Amino acid sequence: MNLDEVVTEVAERLSASVVLVDRAFSLIAYSTQSPDVDKDRVQSILTRSCPPEARAWYESFGIADTTRPVITPENPDIEASSRICLPARYAGAAYGYLFVLPDENSAVSDGDLAAAMSLAGQAGAQLAHTARGRDDMAVAVVDLLEGDRKAFARAITRIEESGLLPDGGALTVLAVDGFLPAPGARALLAPIGSLTAVMLPAGGGAVDPVRSVAESGAGAGALVGVGGSHQGLRSARRSWQQAKLGVRVARHDESMGPIAYWEELGIYRLSSCGPTSVVADAVLTPSVRALLDHRNVDLLVTAQTYLDQAGDTGATAGVGIHRQTLYYRLAKIEEITGLDLSVGAQRLELHVGLTLGRFIFEHLGTEEGGNGEQT
Image (cartoon, rainbow, N blue to C red; front, side, top):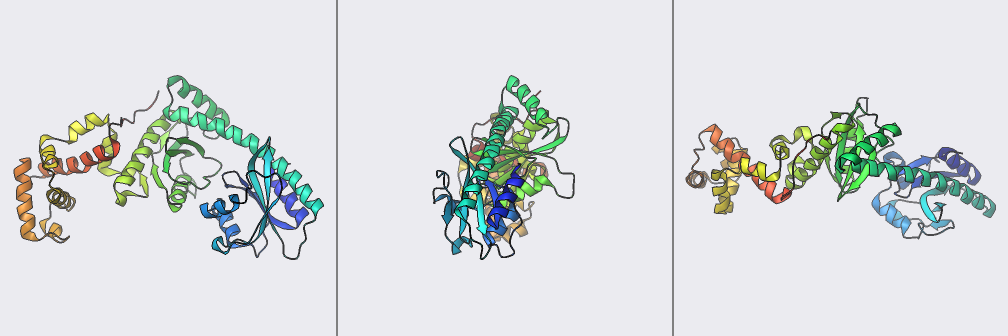
């Protein structure tokens, strides 16, 4: 009996609407739902996940530890009716939960509930097997994206054998900083440091899975970096480096988030061209360093605003700087830097230096920023 059949059997035995979630509360399967199911149930089916506040509510009743059915009361705050939780356990651990919402006027007998608990055990065994396979795959993802040469080679073989992401196809890697709702069956996930790496086949159908997962994460409050689309598993590391940079840029510059696509990072992409110290030496010219070392916040803000406005003094004055004050500050900036801001190449030098220089030192520290492809 597969998981869909387990859910259907429980629904028929208990005359109820039933959903099965894994231990992370990602939706696995669901039965035909009664027309009057509550908003929490509808939302969980539509998004294939459970909101954090609803998950916390259910877990507060000890469902992860009990071996018996648990009845959770109505909760208007999450718009949830009372329901029965059947833990799907295997080998002493809960691998998921069957949430049962009995139909109106139906009565659940002790015998039917015992039979449903037995079915929940079958579901637990299957979920445990799936979880172990997923854990093995997560290790392969980490090895592919950040492992040494031998681990990298083993990871390619393991992922190819899974059939989920055949080598040679286009793929994209996302870096998620925060909560991520269930991303779908084709996604490969792995926690790496404070981020979650998500590998997906690049979109080609009516629904773009990459954009869908990114928007789902952003909708849950996460920052999401989306690497470029590359051919083959050997290019996954490159996409991962690009995705991590996207998250850092989204933290640094709110206008770039909450989803930062590699293709849209603009000048920030230069920070991935080599080790931090090398990029810093390239963009922090003596002129740029002179202005940064001067530590005059008003001058730095004026310079950044003026350069962001493409050297248009009228537009710069229009964002809150008196025109005479602006002229004075621009003259002071030229004096400190030795640059002539009427010359486009010299404006570009200062603009790149201010934009990238502060980003590098404030948000990348001494990290290596290379995005080379593993071979």
